[in-house]
Amino acid sequence: TISKETYLGVIVMGNGRRHISLYWPLKNLIVHKVACGISHTIVSTLDGLYGWGENESGQLGELPGGHIRKIFNLNAVVSKLSCGSEHSCAIISGRLHMWGPKEGGIVGGDGYAFDDVECGGLHCVALKDG
Image (tube, rainbow, N blue to C red; front, side, top):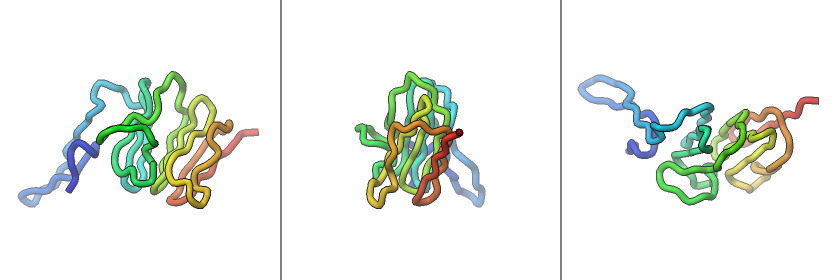
């Protein structure tokens, strides 16, 4: 079952009809960027990075939280968000931050300067211009 406390949008089926029911627990915040993995979502706001969904591999970070967890406090610019199947990446003030499983070297390179990042299912590619 999908609970409204966990997901932003769910497909509700009934009487042969389908519609999307939206639930927005961060309703007082403006979302600037969003990225989705297989079963997790992260968003950036002026207040911070938030995530919800599965967190078995640490893809929502290590900070305590309930259904919606704050991953980072921000006083900085998030230029890029990307999610893989069980990991997440953000470029914050030009620095790469990654979280998720550390097995097999999937997550690494925290704090290095990069301009872009994209995640695939089990990998990431980060680019530095110049």
